[in-house]
Amino acid sequence: MITMSPADQLSLVAVLMMASIHIMAVPLEHGLLDRPRWISIANGLSVAYVVVHLLPELAEMQREWIEAWPDRPFRWLDRQVYYAALIGLLLALGLDRLSSRTTTPGPRFWIHTISFAVYNVIIGGFALHIKRPSLLILAMCAFGAHFLVTDHGLNRLDGRAYARYGRWMLAGAIVLGWLTAIATKPHVVVVAALTGLLSGGILLDVMKEEIPKKYEGHFPAFVGSALGYSLLLLLTRYSEVLG
Image (cartoon, rainbow, N blue to C red; front, side, top):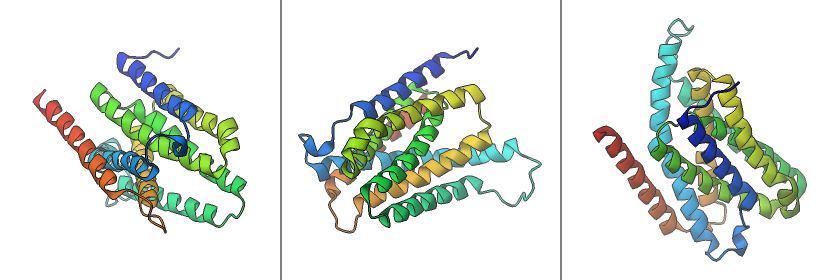
């Protein structure tokens, strides 16, 4: 029987709320807000979280990785987490190139859906390792914003498949990741590698959305949301140090 601490229970609530975003999200083109502006706001939140929080988190995980594996071969190799981030970025780029060469919308939709589902599994597991409620809330906002952009893109590719299958797959993948993490308690090496993959993939997805071939983003909204969210992370870190 799995026993859950209060922090585990809170992370489960956060995971269920993030999963509900996929299920309940309204296609953005039918929203009240201007598409380039609000998508740029969502992307700004995501990239600020990765750069200001996840990348420093990778540095800490790299230190834990080395401490957890003192007798590892190739002791000179001490940047594994950053290589994982690079691999995540390259994988995301490769999948995007593969889908762009697919002429029919259906296969393109499923390539994107499966790749985003893998990211969601990692996100669900990562949420279990966030113990501070304030950081968990900030992570939920950043990942939730990223999910909204993901839903919008998949709905544009194939709205019927997204409504019938895609959103449920993405929502279930988040919960699956959390259940897998709490059942297996993965080693810090595994957590670090997967977090690196996730960071690289999100960075590429955000930049790809903000700098498409024909620019449609809203630069002031992107910059404003990125700086504003970074300030929230800074204040959270400041309160953590004082506490």
